[in-house]
Length: 304
Image (cartoon, rainbow, N blue to C red; front, side):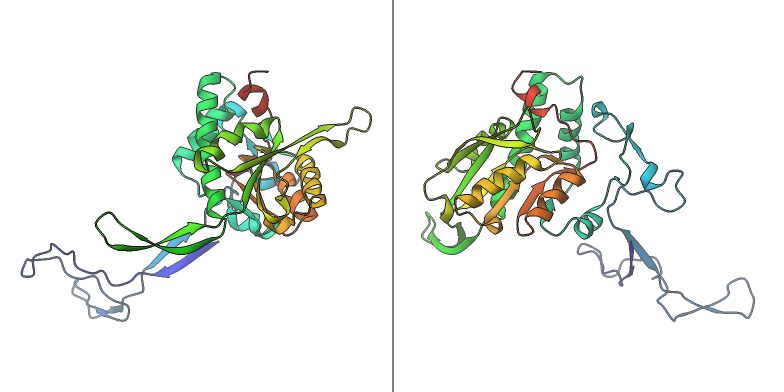
């Protein structure tokens, strides 16, 4: 949805000379504009409107393809154009995602660097070295933003020159939990930011008979029920693995409201399934796209 803003009167530049000759000021709303062509008519100046468009990948009305029929690239192009979406799936802007999935879904602000990292990770021709380097950079960005969601308190410190400085300090009582195996790729990024943080592990795999997610291993800090949890899993495809992991954490006394899921890529279905199951949970990711790079774990650990 476009938002219309009235253009404010421009202020002079700080280094502009006071007596310098400048161009005539633009007419303001309501000013009478004389007819310089020699006629007797004069018109009123109309207010200038600036239009700011919300960021969204949904095609506008009149585009050749509707949302339901939009096609997107293959992984080698960063997910921009040859993938056929499933019925009802489409690329959505932040506003649409918040409305359809919930405010608990948080996306990193998009910029060209993040877009390039996403493209390299999706590119099937990228070398494993480039893939790991880009993945580690993207993981670090997600971890940093995840830490930014944790509570902090104000504090006062003294600088080397003797001055008092009012700053902030994050509260203790946090831990990380990685869902094996792909979630282990995010552990180093968390340790790089929090050297002494405790990290637990969960191993969840699909049962060969029922094809349902099954917990095979879980090890957490003994006081995890008192901690805020950063649950690490890079790819949210169906959301079933994360749902089972959260159930295990709940069994150990952890409330969903203190769990932050750190993810690199998510599908709309995956994020929606998790939030529908646990409305108080928070999901942090860089992109919501109908096609997720499910090859991530194999390529990162060299088992592809």
